[in-house]
Length: 615
Ligand SMILES: Nc1nc2c(ncn2[C@@H]2O[C@H](COP(=O)(O)OP(=O)(O)OP(=O)(O)O)[C@@H](O)[C@H]2O)c(=O)[nH]1
Ligand SMILES: [Mg+2]
Image (cartoon, rainbow, N blue to C red; front, side):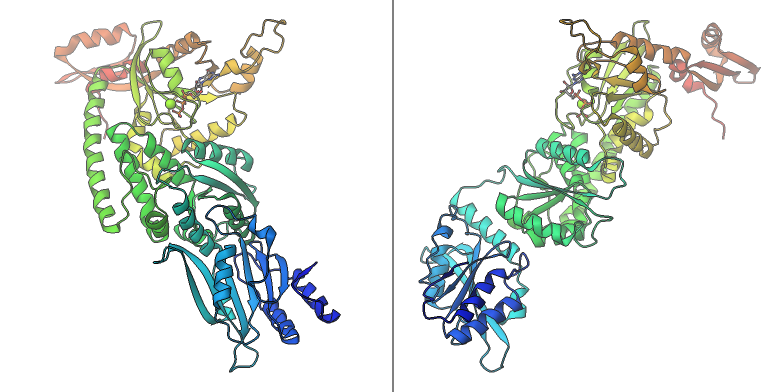
């Protein structure tokens, strides 16, 4: 390793010690170490001249030099200078005089070479052996004279210097510098790093979960610039990830110019806060990401109210931590509300807004209940499409009913339920409703916020669980959907499985040139695995008639038990019941005829007004 500067008259054993400085390393984010400082100062003492080391952000010594810092020329460093930004290299040097204040030449080389920072160290004059130092750095602002402003601190004890979080400092400064050199706008594309934890005992393989996170981030409009997976028994209480991994990510933030870190799991407010402090960029989790997508996609008034409520409830405990994000670094994913609005950041106003939103949702919900009552009276059973996001629910609804619901190869294309009337081949009428797609790790707050929308599911007489059977994780997706259904108390509803996208399977034994698409009956049976259902293709229309027949069959087969009191004036109803062969027991009382009936589920709503409710 070469020593920079004039070393001709230096004794060999001192040259050796200078060379030894190349072996020293410094933890990422820390200015220097006591070991490095003392060695530099001892050599300085032997030489009577300045010693300087140049370190990169990984804490590796790139160059050692003797002589004053302004005469060192570091050609290879200059080429690294990105427009407007810091070089990624810092200089630590000794002041043999013991006065560690930064000199004019020090500051000018800091400015000229655009170092991350410049430090001068020395022994404190009055106390033998104690090391002190000063630090100079760019602030990212413009000084009054139009030059880049510099700031200096010190002399400080080395302990204090080592407590400065360099990563954070550099990120904030770089952010300011690049904001000035290129005009940035609030909706500038986010450059996201993704990170996930593999605890080894989750339902989903971590790779799959990360791939899904990537699709979510893409849907939200971010560019993915890096991915990290850490294997670890359980999350770190303070940082969620281990410290080493956080340091590694800190480096990537610099190298890749990332503006956002997205974690695959829910973070506690303090983990989020700590990570932001360490990394100097915005940190969000899967939940915030999903909320952000929902905010962008909600169309109906009710949808918007629900998303905003969920976002505010999510943000409330995080406000302290997000101060940095929301106020200083501003904008982008995680700060966008539904519509044009940016999310409220003032705690008091949030409380007021939450209150207001809840009242509005209540009102909307009352209105829906009215509709529902009316619909019940219309006697038409309700069938709800449920399933993992992107399974093809909307496509299926469109194909079956000729509706024009937005369907797209993006996650969460649908947020607002759409209901359509459908007459099945044998004239059974149903109402078919499309719902928001589910996803693994669906935030609890969101299920709660979307309760009103998801009431359609709870009210349904039959669920069609749509599955994208071309997705290799379809079994896990089914399980995740079932988890959400449990949360909605809808898991025991009668369900038909609709294995969609069957067209993606080529028939293996199709004759050459006859590349028929579809599933063989054997494959179909294997997929359904005992579940009641059918394989279809919403795209090609294959098997959709059979699906409709299956639904019809369900309603004609399904028997419900009821006890009714039919007023004498409504004798016509009694006749109808007899025609259905539904009557099991008859009893007469003062007000009418009491009957115990067993009738097709499709007729339940018709007779519900006469039902006797047992206490
Ligand atoms: N190959 C194939 N693609 C399909 C089929 N059905 C739907 N798709 C595609 O799958 C993607 C998702 O379809 P959507 O209907 O939006 O799915 P969804 O379940 O409503 O999704 P969310 O609303 O996001 O929950 C779209 O690109 C569809 O074109 C199918 O039968 N075969
Ligand atoms: Mg949809």
